[in-house]
Image 1: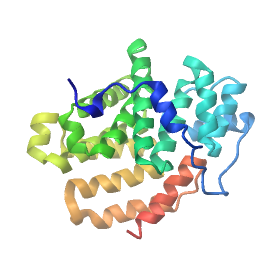
Image 2 (image 1 turned 45 degrees about the vertical axis):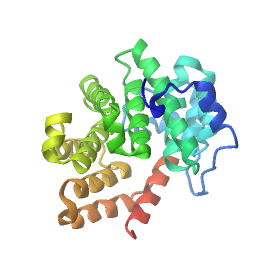
Image 3 (image 1 turned 60 degrees about the horizontal axis):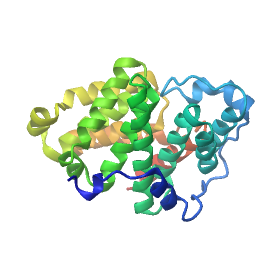
Length: 276
């Protein structure tokens, strides 16, 4: 019998936990606002990290406009209303909200579990759906950080994250976000278990992490999230000897002009990180 953390979480129970009170609203007023037309005009820039195809004009496009404008709760609800076609929106809005804004740890973890389950079910039916694979990996990765990476590795979650991200990169070699996420996975595991155990047990390597970080930034050089993850990764892999380089990466992230709500959150995190 698996440990309690890995017991199947019904979508109903996760939804009930998340709906106990409204989602926390974005705390910034200087976020760009979108309608369907302006969203579609800027779609390539907004989705540079994933290469996701734009939706047709209509209600689902409006849902994506709500997401990029920072109304994650409404975006997730619209995504779920559109069934299969809306899962990418629902999963992305839920995962990003949980990562950046949800203050209740139990609800935060429940939301990540909810996304992971939805995405896993979708990828089971569509094994080449990169959005399903990526958001499954993202949600499991953030969930793992919440319960501790070492504990998650012991429960076998690390292999699921690694396999999903490697599959995304194989299917979509220009998926910048997957490169950064997989690089961060390598760095996190090495930081927790060491170079030798990491390589022998989990197939992670320092040089692979650096190559993935570099490739991800080459594909999406204006990603504040990628710059911060690279900075964190350098410190996990090499310690304070790379502090100056990590600081420069955070400085680059903090100076970016955010194009949407998620980027606004990333830039604010980069600014805060410079004072830690």
